Image (cartoon, rainbow, N blue to C red; front, side):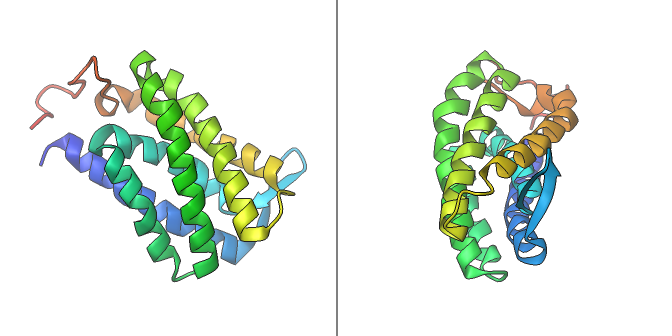
Amino acid sequence: MSLRTAAGLAALAGYIAVIFAANWAVQRFGPVPVGFGLRAPAAVYFVGLAFTLRDLVQNILGRWVSLAAIPAGALVSAAVSPALALASGLAFFSSELADFLVYTPLLRRGWIVALVPANLAGCVVDSLVFLTVAFGSLSLLAGQVVGKAWMTGLAVLVLAPLRRWYVLTPQRNSGLPAGAAA
């Protein structure tokens, strides 16, 4: 197995685990502060990270694998709460479609150029769907967007130095370190 495939599988496992962790956090902690006097369901800190992991999965393993991870995450989340698992699954699926419309076409222009608008679009779509289905209210929408933005920013800062080997655009089919490709 190549280093690239192993990294993709690790991102996939992380993505599924983060979906579970997000639902667990909502169930365990409820709304939490996210700054600026705003509150959001505790899942917000995990979902911001999930968007970046989703993009890694899409880059390395492909679109269909990133889509397949959503029902897998929802299935394991059903152990926490079937209602939250449904809301989460629908929200992640909706944000994944938004990601396909924004991230995938923009990736040719560069990772950051694609990641920032895609995560913003995914953040808003995910928040609208999740809050509506899970709580029947959009009262925590501003907090959701702010909290996800914090976590997306953190994930970008951590992953940016490594992007040369995991973000393979159509124009560059090998950005792996020498000897890393299988």
